[in-house]
Image (cartoon, rainbow, N blue to C red; front, side, top):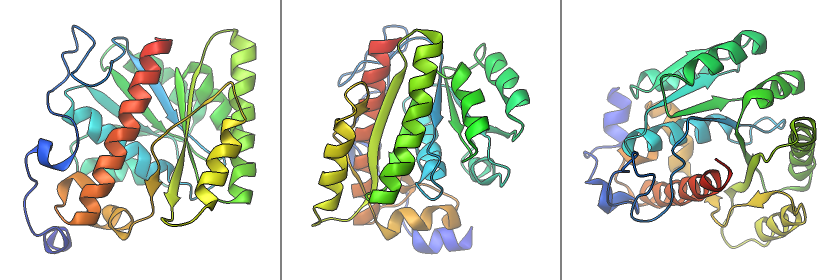
Amino acid sequence: MQQKQALCSQELEPAHNVVSWKNPIRTAVGWNDKYQIASTTLIIAVSNIKGGAGKTTTSIHLGQWYQQQGISVAVADADPQGSAANWCRFLDIESFLEPDSGVLVDRLLDLRESVDRIVVDCPGNEASIKDILDVADAILIPCLPGGLDLHATNQTLQLARRKQRAQQKRFAVLLFINRARKGTLLSSDVAEALRQQQEFSVAETTIYDRQAIANMPGQETTVWDCRDRAAKESAREFASLFEELETLLSAYA
């Protein structure tokens, strides 16, 4: 905690100075001032078979973003390492660790009765991902800007296709470029390649690679708890991405 105070030396500014939202969500209505909010309880799987794509960091920031919006949320950690569940303890986000996908599915269904959003930090195991997607309402896929990473993302998309065909219903899928480097064309090329998958949505928002994000697990916090410029830029990007996700979810709910 001393390290956190040293690296984030000042208190968080009011939310409107850090990210783009201004008013809390009116959940009974289903709208805020900028984007539509799906009013039903939804399970969101954050998944990519590729390790190191940023699933845990995305899950935690999504969970805290929901909290700051006034939406009740729980983070389910399906990775045996338990990184997400441990991180949540420092942020007062409801969470639990359950690497057994069979048990996890039952717990996810039970949680539908008590929270508005359930964010699942998925493992890289294909069998576990399949089990989770059986009950999920959406999948958020971080994709690193590289050819090999694109191949792994396509493997994950194939699992989403199978779910759609098996259940014969619409299933929200949002891909986004994560840890991109500014000033390079590779991220744009990968985004364009992803858009060829016309049945899936690709976010307009890109999350850029910054040390501020990499520091967050060690500081036991998120980018919204730091006032340095890089963290504030990342906070805006995450908020924009999650607004895109909620707009997509509202169309599928």
